[in-house]
Amino acid sequence: MLLLMAEGFPLLEMIEEQTAFKPECVVLTHSLRELEAIGEREGGLMRKKCELAVKIAREKCRIVEFRGDLKNADDAIIEYAVLNNAAVASNDRELRRRAREKGLSEIYLREESHRIVVEGLLEY
Image (tube, rainbow, N blue to C red; front, side, top):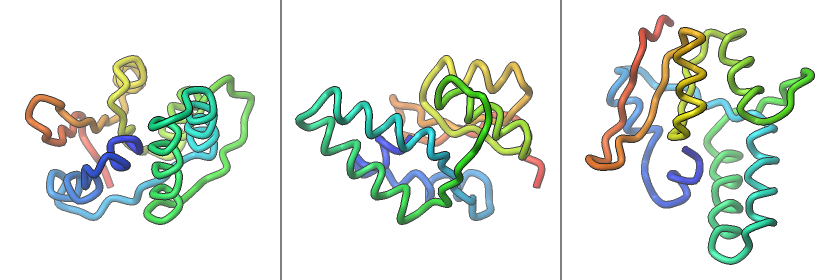
């Protein structure tokens, strides 16, 4: 989702319209490190997108250092969401599948219509 924000999609505003409340965007440091690694590995335009995504996250989101014996960013996202009753915002199908299996709400961008979809009951 951060890469989509770097492409100019106003996702936080779109999510707010769908949920009728202002969401708190939480980004785990695992995700920032993953973006930095992708940018380093891919280079070029992807590197610039990743750098912009990290900058947007630092400006618009609360950055959380989430500890635990976790292999990757997806594991950290799922564990954090379960422990904090948080929705998972992602366009990664595998991550969304894992979120559904845990009974978590999921938020994603429907690419065909460029609309935000919120699935699952958000209880706040």
